[in-house]
Image (cartoon, rainbow, N blue to C red; front, side, top):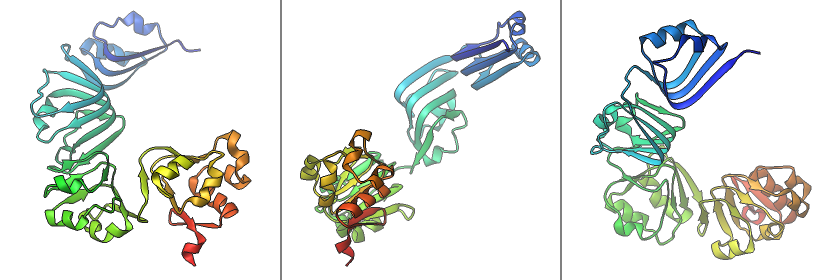
Amino acid sequence: MPNKLLIKANFCDLRNVKEETLAAYDVIEVRANVVVLNDRARELIARYPVTLKCDLATDKPNIALRSVNGVAEVTPGDVPEADTVLTVNGELKIASGSAEVLARYLQITVNGQVYCPRSLSGKLGNVAVNGQIITWPDGAVQLKNTAVLDSTFALRAKPALYWAARCVVMLDPALDAAALAKQGVRFDTPRAILAQSLATQAAPLFEDDTDLEIVPDGTAYLKDDAELTAALIRRKGNKLYVDGRLTLTAESAALLPQLEYCKVTGTAWCPPHRRKHFPPAVCRQRKFRQCVADCCRARAGYRWTIGCWRPRTAFA
């Protein structure tokens, strides 16, 4: 069996490595964000079975290391020290006008997401991303990733482009989409969920590449995972849009016929010890579309259509 040496570190200085150390192993692997080398170290590594897996290999010894767990920001006024290496475990937000500051970093490693203006998307040569790069329009007003708008939004709205990284939700019947249009409000987002009565006036507010989803009036939007219970129906009504996972319990079997509309973007999950309360066809499926459609057919004569299910009487 080969004698293997594995080194894992954020920063690894190999300038003083000894040849006898390298000769003692059959395989050497170095995994680091930054590896510091010199000519001698490069020559030795080339002669021995050494593999470097790093974001940056440099000969600069005086490196300033900075690590952030959570959210880090690069702004025009936050100028780093020379030869700074930044590691972010979470989110990196790059503000508009930060191109010069960004270039001063020797290396930036992000384990997570990077948010930056679209004008800077081509200037991330020194940024290594183990995750996703999300760009937003320059000059846009940034909303929450999932922006649920109500009637109060119009009171503060400006004649500007608003951007949401994930989704804009417009289900409040008191939201005046026509007034937003007159104010010059526009939206840039990958997806928009619109109430049917608002769709005609709200749809033109979005960019052409936005995926528009029209849902019945009175639908309640649930941002996270939910459990189908009587309390949930009392609070939110019988029209639900679950943007996550829906858990079905023993109580849920009797509640399904009460729902007029239900859309789940994730999976309906039925715990194994609850499966006896549902028809066998439901328990064999994991995806919500198949689970709920089978259950409704068995219990209340529902029909699956366009990503959701409704009573068959709606199609008579």
